[in-house]
Length: 299
Length: 299
Image (cartoon, rainbow over the protein chains, first blue to last red):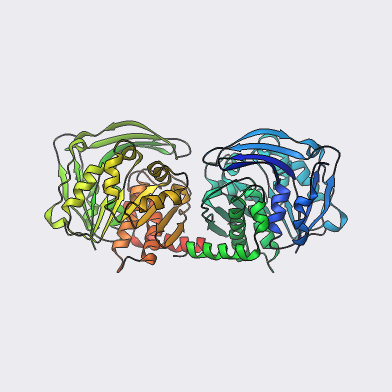
């Protein structure tokens, strides 16, 4: 089944202890699409400026990613600059130039409105709600967000959270959103607002899946050298939703596997800048790590 | 098989957001023994002052814990006071009164010198080495330590690390000891100094087992309410060593299970002050959580 993703498309300038990339193509929609398309078709909606070099994402056509929803507007593409610290868990934002993204108002092309899976990548909650109003009875809606929206748009975020099936947040975001220190309590409080499934991202410590009657603890795939963590969360979501959309049914076992696939795909993302690593891998590379994950967790 | 543990015995004064206990019996040897004795016999060597109320640990006799190695010296028992912050990962030390522990020089009773398993709990590395010289060809030696000794006794610690089979450290200690940011690299560097097995404790994020040809990722058992984290690490070690000593053979599968038992036992420890919770549980309670852990990690 196909997934519609609506989110940011960016040209990042990234510095890490291992090097820098002043033109790292990224953004939540792009990282998600590169990841999800390893498993099932994706249609992307977003906006870029006239400086955006489409040849850099040409490979996405071979992966069944529809780009008709990407509009080109006068001006520059959204640009973000960041520098990671030695331990990679902290980063400084050097600049944020919204550019054409500032007036982004997602319009879903007609032939995308029947997509069965909807991923609302990290954009402001009003726009996420707009998207939900444009689509027709999806099978599953999944929402991502960030600390900024919890901070400045709490009411709008609450409203859209109450309308989706799955919420993906990292541990800090759950604590901030719920006001609770325990992530399990926080997740259950969020689920009481509507969602049936919470996926808690814990970075290098893995992920947790919580449903009404299931709790699944997934480790992160151990990485020898994290070169650039940018996009890890978005590609986790891509692996999670893309794999789930490839399954015949949404049930406990498919959800658990999807978390493992999300975690595994993210482990490739961080091995290089931008989606350089994610671009070169195949489904077989992912399967090899998933098998390794299974081996590393059995007792 | 029996385990000899040498370490501290303390009366702690602990404050957490959930309450306080001004007379919390603890210390590394005591937490270890309460935990390990759920699985196999333990013999404890340590020192207490005249203020120590032995009736508080009377229950250990029913659990096959030998106390003949606990000497009573004139003066007071080692006392530590600490206050945990809201998130439980940080704590302030309010006071440390070494008292009789200041001149602790472990003497291993003759009938303990043939114990097959030796646990060198967190005491200064010179004393840990002393213990190794007093025992006769143990089957397995396991060492724990802390940031203080890495800081002020690095050479002494290096020497004793090179002489043991298993080292247990938390993620921060591995980084500090090895000078490496990646815990897998750090662990392998320590193993190059002698040990065959590294166990990395990651608190609420679980634990990792590393041997020359195995890598095992264990989650932490999810706890609804952490009341007091004191003793979690020592009881993890107790569950790990105690369970391993109950197994017919030390192999990959037994080591992996031992990590799960360590992690599970620690999950009980933190549910109450001191070893109050650990004291009241049975082997069956542990098995129930281990089964739950198995269920929560399968995919």
